[in-house]
Image 1 (cartoon, rainbow, N blue to C red):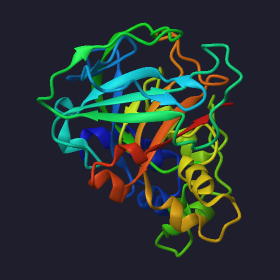
Image 2: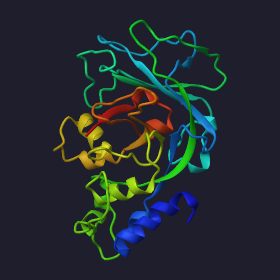
Image 3: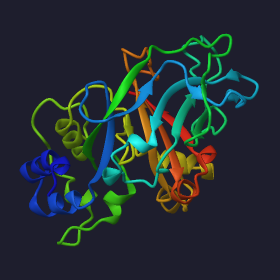
Image 4: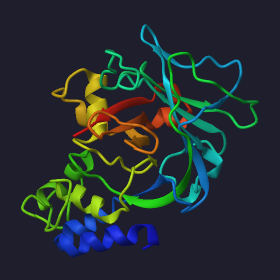
Length: 288
């Protein structure tokens, strides 16, 4: 058991029955938390001005205006041995989103709206310049981000909780139905409580791993947006096709607030990620 798993594994063994604890721990994936403290390599930047090719058009939401630049991630600087997703070995990912609240706009991105956010890959070696934001877009305060490897796990309605069986034949979701945890937790769902307890508190910016949902599994939300209906019988199959690319949390230092202290999530189908089709990533927002 490597160190990134230790804290969450120990909590699972302490508070869950042995069988679901072992089954859940078998699903853990490393995620790269993007933190302000120098916990590891510098891997990106939040806020500020993006470094982009001079000829590349600034992303916009047709009919609503230019998107806001949120963050950049240096793929080559990420600790690749802990990446759970096949990112390019080099190049920079730029994340954009239409922040209507910041611009006092009545335009609000719909769930999974592929036009209201954008992920742009700037390949390594391509000449770039610092790009000023278009008129009407005020940059967020900038700061460097460093990589910290953490354990992530399925929680809050994730399909794997229903599909993974314990040794006694129950699904993980069934096996913890009667489990309750003591203490001051921010999540009423047992797996979410354990993940929250395991991690250092602060903005949960992250690349790869499992999402840290504020509400239901974000994979289900994206699948419903693609299929047009939560009741579609193909929902579970579609949800299983999507993986977390990145999440950007509300962050006071960066002047970012997503709804009521919520979080933005970018998901992408695994085959699109393998092919580098970042324009097909979809973003969703969850808040309390």
